[in-house]
Length: 95
Image 1 (tube, rainbow, N blue to C red):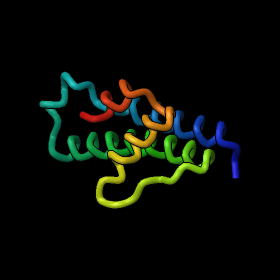
Image 2: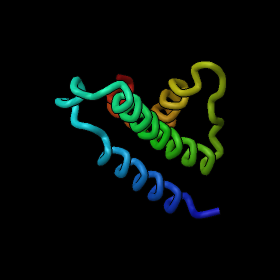
Image 3: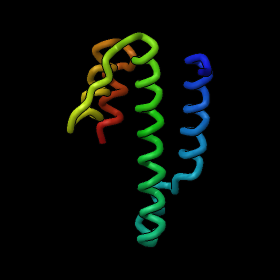
């Protein structure tokens, strides 16, 4: 298995690629349903990348990864409590 740093760097590269493909918010009202679905998929890929980085750090540090219906939110909250991400970052991810 690749070292933690390499796995995180790979996720960051994926996130950068996803962000480069996202349409500008100014033009989102002009998108077709198909284009909106594509943009939604890109947005989900962005959040999956963030979650993957947090999960890799938690696994590396033997921190339990939340499960259950609200695991996405619980993961972010746990990452804040463990000092993996800043509270301000978690607030930016909420919308």
